[in-house]
Image (cartoon, rainbow, N blue to C red; front, top):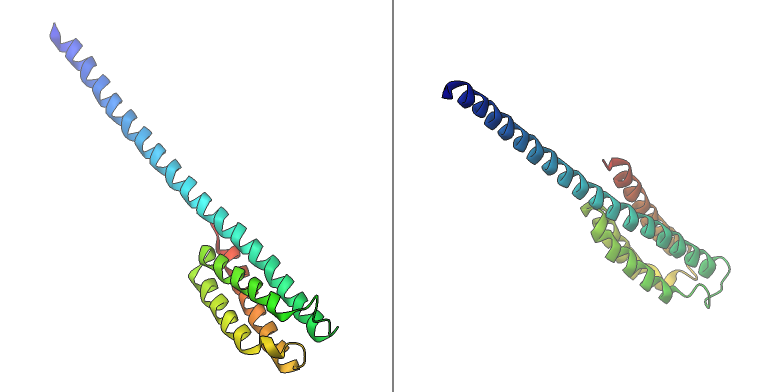
Length: 143
């Protein structure tokens, strides 16, 4: 007489265990996916901000060099932009961070010549282009 009840109870227990396992697996996957999505969102936002700052820095360089307007194209303003780019690069990717640090080195050795030396402009713009290319590579690789 206990046999049919025990059989149903055993089936109930097995069903309950499998239900709990599937629930746990589903919840774990959802948490993992949300974490990856948040990380990708952070990388995207930082990358877009860096692209804006890189464009602004490039514009500042062109104003200083070609327009000879050292008020709007003051190379010292570039230090703020380069610093922000370097700070944001930490949020994007180690390779972006490295190219941003390289841009900082290029800027530090060329910023004084921006208004009068074509070679200084070319070196800094090449550094900007390197960071920009690395950002685009990282954005394309996001899941």
